[in-house]
Every structure is written in C-alpha cells, then in structure tokens.
Figure (cartoon, rainbow over the protein chains, first blue to last red):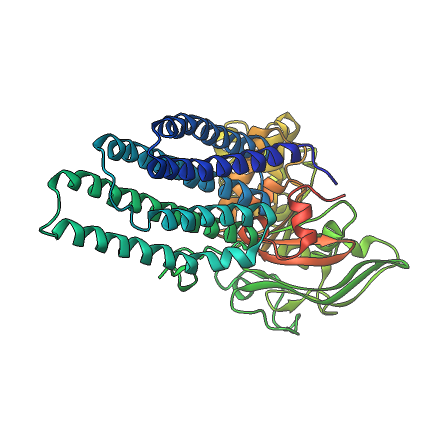
Length: 225
Length: 274
C-alpha cells in the first residue's frame, strides 16, 4: 500500500541525491580550478555551495516536519536519521570544496607553478568515495557500504604521503621562500580532500544504520585504518 | 509486590499447583496456546513470556486475536459458549486453568480496564470499595483507607477527594476511566489488563492515563491492547505483534518500533499494512 506521505520521503531521497551530485561536482570543479589555474571555476565553486546549503536547510526542515506530523517508526525513522546526518556530511563536503577553491585562488594569484603532488589522484579517490556512499544510500547497497570504511585507508595514506613530500620540499634549502604560502595551501587542500573521504565514510556508516539498525561507529567494523 | 504470588494472591498454594515455573523476570507465560470460538480457531500456537512489573503491549489489526488473548488471561472467554483452548497460560507460575482455581478468585488477581469506562451507578467512593463490600469487608476505616490509596494510585484523589459521595457519572470520561483503574487497584491485583483504555478519551485524558500506566507498572504487571502505535511505543516495555491469530514478532518495544525483524511488523507499525 502506497502511503500518502511516501512522496515526502521520495522528495527527501531526491534532494539528498541532488546534494551529493553538487558536492561531488564542486570538489571536482575546485580541483580543476587549481590544475587549470582558472579563477572562474573558483567563483563557480563558491557560488554553487549556496545551493548545497539551501538543500541542507530543506532536508533539516522536512525531517523535523515529518517527525512532527507522521510519527515515523522503524525504517522510516532510520531513513530520516540518515537523511539528517547524511545531509550534514554533504554540506560539510561542499564547505571543503569551497575551502579548496579559496586556497586554489590564493595559489593561482601567487603565480605558483610548481608541483601539485598527487592532489588530483587524492581528489579522484575522495570524490569516488562520496559517489559510492550516496549510491549505497539510493540503491540500498549494504555490501558496498560495509567496504567503504576500509577503502578510506588508501585516501589517508595518500594524504600522509603528500604531506611528507610537501614538508620535505619546505625543508629543502633550495626552496624559493615565495613558494611557502602556496605549499602550505596545498597541504590544506590535501587535508580538505582527506576530510571529504571521512564524510563519505560517515555516510556509509549512516547507510548501514539505515539498512540494518546497526550502529557500527567506533567499532571494529568501522576501522578506517 | 516483589513476591506477589505468595503475598497477595488470593489463591492458596493448595488450591493451585504450579505447572510451569515463571522465569526470573517473567510473570505471564503463554505456552503452546490455541483457542477456538466454536469451530473457528482464533489463536494459533502462541508462546510468549511477559515480564513482571512491566507493560506489555499487544498490537495488530482488528481481528488479529489480541483482545481474545487479553480476555483469556482472566478467563473472560469462559463466558462464551463453545469457546475452548489447548495449551496453557500461567500467571505467577500458576496455571489459570488449574481445576482447583476458582475463576472469581482469578479475576481478583487480574484487574481489567475496558475500552469504555464502566463505572457502577453508585457514588465515586462506593465504586472503589465495591469489591471489598462484596467480599464482606465493611469496616469504615478499612474502606476509607483503600478508597484513598486506590484513588491516589489512579491519580484521581486530588480531583475527587471533596466529592466522594457524588455519582460516578458526574465525572468526565477521563476521570471515569481512572476511577475504573482505581476500582481495579482496590483489589490489589497482580496484573492489570487494559483493553484500549484510551480509545474514547481526549488527548489530555489520554496523557493522564498513559502517565498513570507508567506509574502503575512500578507495582503491577500490565498488559495493554491498543490500536494506537504511538501509545504502545510510549507506555510499553515489550510489544507483541499479532496477525490472523498468530504471534508474528515479540520483542522490546524500542526494537519493534526502531528495528523490527519481521517484514509484516515493519509494514504494520509504519502504516504500510493493507
């Protein structure tokens, strides 16, 4: 039997998907801005974050409304919990994209034309994780959701490797001191991407809770390393 | 009421031979229980244990057998011609079908509150002490004490203490239902059965009765039949979901409403049933 409020829950799924698409695209656009030295893409990323923020507010408001009006239970209440937490993770992912874009702008304006290390690879891994996490939610794919926390290890290791390389570069006596601010910005960009990976894992954990009722946070199943 | 079966039961040990020992925390046990109205089988092979001094909610669509089961706990269905059963129900370790048990004494142990409040056409005071009078207890000091204690336990004392002599019918619907609860409590029962006790009440009266159920379960074992899912979630510790006379799922209430294990339960509690 189709319940009269089913459409509300479908709209919630649609808007979460839209948030994920925007967050995914925004991280990619911010990284592209860095690589292509394109200030228009920086602007585009920052502007697009407004829509993610609006969707985040929409989700929060509709979850509260649904709880108030329909007293949801069982998988309905778990869906709402996942929507609330997941939209927060996607909103934070959008914020990380903005942060990347703003640091890319500083790097572009500084005239830095040196090594970008493996930031493009790190970005691809992190955005793929977000994509997989939201796909698990939409397709109710428990198996993939369970694998995501351990896949985050690859992201963490690459982030650490990039950090070591940048530190080594900064410690190098041949370094042009004018490059230091850009290198520090690159370090922060890699940190932002590592955080995007963490948000993807959070979403996967929330999806596992939605599908099974099991809270795996802070357990062996959630080991990311 | 810790050792209620020894202290407060009106059945002596000679009268009732326990067939099944109740578990440490379980008080009502339903064992391999089947029940028929004539040829129509309405309860199928039920097995469940209800904990002592907790509230157990029986939920399910109309006709699923929840009220039938409730009415078997105090053998109300004995009044139905051609009703019969197999299996057993024990309360406090005593079979309710033990031939040595008098049904009247069983019903003193097990109070019941119905969907529609049914006060006697008497004063508020006389309603509460009626069962004592029937038992031949007429000492005024005893009756006064029981009336006050029961009305206080039913959260009604403050509202009626100055009008105990007035007709019970002068009370509001919610007050009448709490008077019926006070009348049930006056017997010092072990178990209180509630058959949709709030279905005829407004939200304020419902909230008072629900609050009362939460208080009463400190002292009594409560079994409540309700069609109101939120009420079951609010007041009960355990929930049993029935469908077509079968027990589909029985678990802690929070599990039933947060993470039911059976698809039919999920469909029913979340309103997808039909």
